[in-house]
Image 1 (cartoon, rainbow, N blue to C red):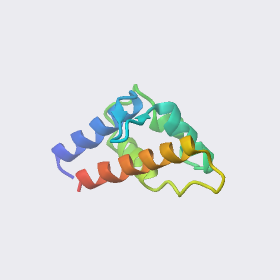
Image 2 (cartoon, one colour):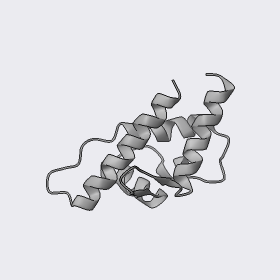
Image 3 (cartoon, helix red, strand yellow):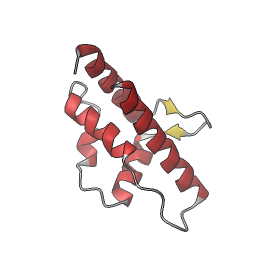
Image 4 (spheres, rainbow, N blue to C red):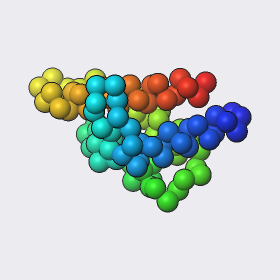
Length: 102
């Protein structure tokens, strides 16, 4: 992984945890939304560590966050439209962010 890729990964994580991502449909991704969706599916990763804004240089944490978002499962049946929209936005962000780092 070259330096440009590392900086790109850290930058994308920083945007996500600073509530600065808005998807093409106008949905605003927030750290609270990320936390809710990662916890909802019983994810065993340390969500608080992934979202810690004071750890700005940790490439491994940044990559782990993007990977976790990209691998979120589909929403369970009976989920609200808002939950479905949030899940789709998070997965799309994670997947497109990882593609940009290849």
